[in-house]
Image (cartoon, rainbow, N blue to C red; front, side, top):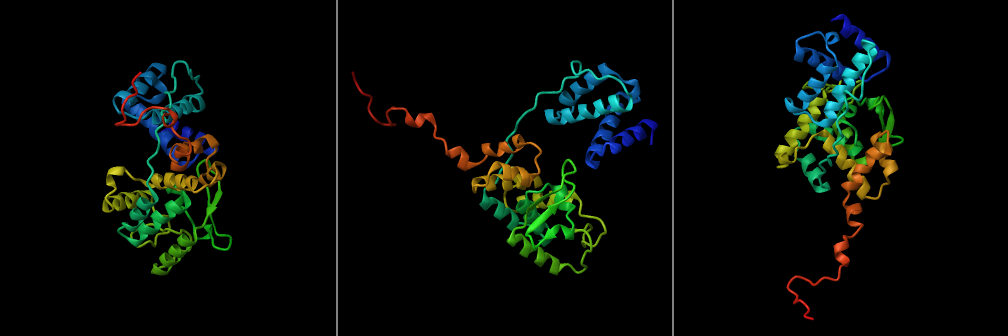
Length: 294
């Protein structure tokens, strides 16, 4: 471990950054250094400018990903090297808003029923029933399932924030069936790792990703590019269509800002169809009707 890498790790950890963010920031600085074949402390604003351009032109990264890479470099130069950072010289790219993919309720049911293994099925059910992120589902503990209050505790979510989500009676019954089927009962993690589900560590997020991919292929939905976050989007959109308010959905998702949650207004059929098109009130003739002569 180099001296600079050690300092950066210490600076990130003493600010209580999430492990995923720490990994992403360290990886970015290492990638930046390898790109120019020089130590990062020997690189300056011109190199950052060239690197930013290459992220778009060579590696074809999305604007939001490029923004994260620049944030990592800014942290390195400001907090580790104690140098200045000019926003004018290194502007962040404009954000691009893409509407997420959402399945119908019938498609979600078809996806869950297409799971190849019972373990994959319970993972898909938990993702959809809670709206939790894949890391949050993977790190659920047995003690997080509160059947007395019918809630699930999500601990250490994005931004290190805890929250509670509803415990669906249908999910609770499925979890009990899953529990009875385990040959070796876990003592800590709800979904233990390894193929026998007996490890002392949680299942990896890759398993949840594969569960979605394989079920989508078996269900004939593989053209929809379904991943664990798709079920989170479905959870929020279907709640909104069922009449839940945005503030409640914001709390369930663990969004810091209500603006993040408003994207689901663009996806809800109930909200989209609530307002008619202005075309419908125009006094124009219908197709096939004769034109009125003067």
